Length: 340
Image 1 (cartoon, rainbow, N blue to C red):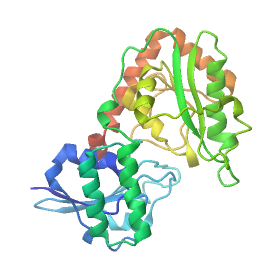
Image 2: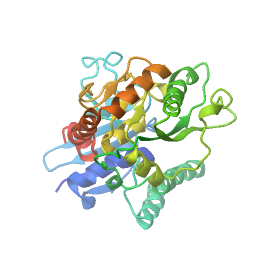
Image 3: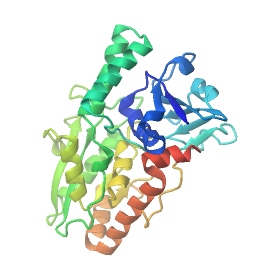
C-alpha cells in the first residue's frame, strides 16, 4: 500500500490544494504527518514537502508556491521532483534545474471538517515540537484555511453567463514601495479595469479594490475605485460565476495570483495582461484567454466591449478556460504533473 508522509509544519493555507490532490489520488487513509523525513530542512515556509512511499521506491517531492520565480536550493537538493507555481524558464533554465516541474496556479481551499481541522492543527503542533510563537502561527494558518476558504466543489462554471452585461471584480490594493512598485503595476492595471467598466453605461458593475493596509496603500491615488464592502469567499465565488468577464494581471512580485487559478476553475472569459511567468502549457489567446498588450483604460475597455458584444467568442473563452483547468489545473492534475 502506498503511504504518503506530509511535513507537519506545512503552511496548509497554501498546501491544502495539493493535499486535496493527494487525497483524490490515494485516499485519506494513505496520508500521515511525520516530521522525521524533513528535519534537515530549515527554510521551508513556502514549500510543501512530502514523501511518497511505495513498495518498490521512495520519492521525495517539494512543491514551491512562493511568489518569486527563484528556487529554494535547500528543498531542491533534498527532493527528487520539484514542482513550482511561478516557474520562469528564462530565469531558472531547465538544464540547470532538471528536477523542476512547472505547475498551474493554485489557490487555498478547505478540505477538512472543523473537527478534523482542529485535530490536525493540535496534533501537528505537538508533532513538530515548535516554539509557542511558531505554534500560534501554525494554528492561525489552519484557522484561515477553514474560515476564509471553501471546498473545491464550489469552483464550477455557470454556463452560459447572463445575457445582461454584469461584471464583478474585487481584488486587493497592494501596498507599494521601491522594491515592489505595485502602484504602477498591478494596482494601476486593476484600477483601470474598474474605471473602464464604470465608463460603460450599459454595463452593471460591482466591486472595487480593497486596501491590504490603509496605512501603507495609496488610498488617495485610487479613491475612485475603492470598495469598502466585506466579502466572504462564498459571495466572491457566486458573484464571479455570474460575471460575464473577469480580469487578470500578474500580481505581487509579478506572480500568478490565486485569481488566475480561480478564474480557470470557474470557466470564465478572462481578459489578461501578458503573464510574467510560465505555465505547464501556455494559455492561448482566442482559445482559453484574451490577452491585451497594455493596461490603459482604453485598451481594457475595447476588450470588454468585444467580449460583451460577441457572445460566441465569450462562450468559447469560457469553455477553453475550464478545459485548461481540467487538463492542467485541478488538485489531482497538479499531482499528476509531478509524475505521481
